[in-house]
Amino acid sequence: MALYIDPPTWPGHGRLWSHLVSDASYEELHLFAAAIGCPPRAFDGDHYDLPSERYASAVAAGAAEVGSKELLRRLTEAGLRVRKRRPPSDVGA
Image 1 (tube, one colour):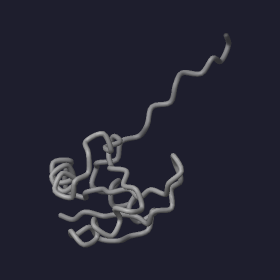
Image 2 (cartoon, helix red, strand yellow; image 1 turned 90 degrees about the vertical axis):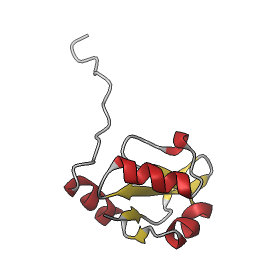
Image 3 (tube, helix red, strand yellow; image 1 turned 30 degrees about the vertical axis):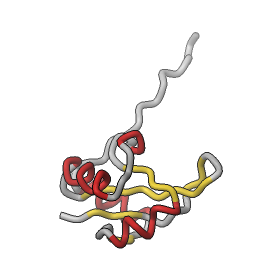
Image 4 (cartoon, helix red, strand yellow; image 1 turned 45 degrees about the vertical axis):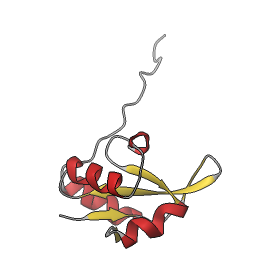
């Protein structure tokens, strides 16, 4: 059981973001996120989005630093990966 965080390289809303995931359960992820003061609204299906200024505190609290590909691999292997739904296309309309 571990928590993982990738580097804050994802742009959005004028900031850079990291992803925080668990390789064990969403319960573990939610408990860790709450412990570091991450608001529930930062949860995005299978991970938390953390702004760059929170990266160091997540690592200090125990999140392991990994690259984005490694983070995705661990999340997928744990069976916790949630794929985003695509809106229906207007093919043939």
